[in-house]
Length: 190
Image (cartoon, rainbow, N blue to C red; front, top):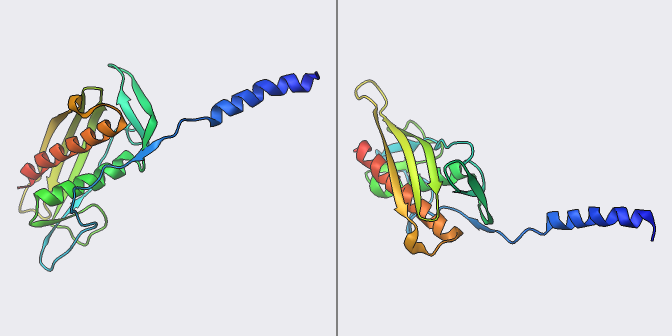
């Protein structure tokens, strides 16, 4: 056999290995059932503008990331987000807040002169085999000088033990943990 053939075999093997990824499922954090898409503005209604949620860079990706110990993280081989996590989390949090703050219109996009703005910074959103743990701080900002800003923070945990494991369980647990964050923010906004 000629020498070119034997040089090409390892290269072809490497290329085949690079293209044989397992099938990946794509996930989003879904809005609650019955949620209308986009803000529904009624005349005279108060509007809350949810600013884009700020996440640590290692989380703001389309990789579905889980914690693998005190210092390690691992991207799922079988699942990924359909959008950057910051986008999906902002959209889901706006939907959750809409259900909790029904006297307001909650918008996560452009709005004209919002009555209130909410800024959220996530410092950790760790998923392990056992739990989804979210640590965040938030500020409710009223326009004008009549009211001061209200700030708070919290850590929210959702057990994953009864969910059966896997990417679907992780995503469902994360969505539930974001709903718990919405409860905390709604309490501050009231």
